[in-house]
Length: 102
Image (cartoon, rainbow, N blue to C red; front, side):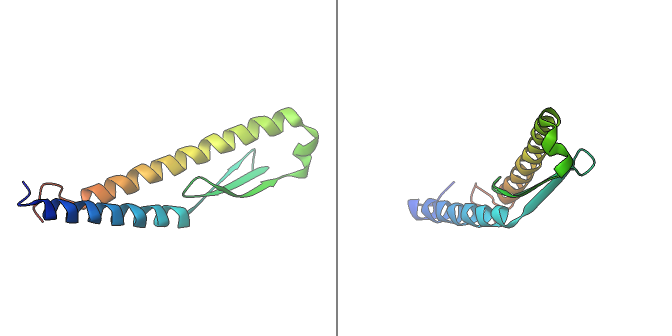
């Protein structure tokens, strides 16, 4: 499988570099979602950090609707980020041959 420990060390180093590149790449992406006919607009980066939130003034007097729409927006955007992270990780792993061949 590995001719020596040096080969394995190089492979692990490459995996660490690829993982770091992936994290940077993910953080640079932006995902946005609108709910309630655009009354709530939420944007997050690929790391799942909220970078922007807009709430229509009409919702400020309707706490229950605001809560429902915010929960929906957060759930939708979390799914988007998770799917992107999974597909990016699978793409990274697909580009590597962990068993020594190139």
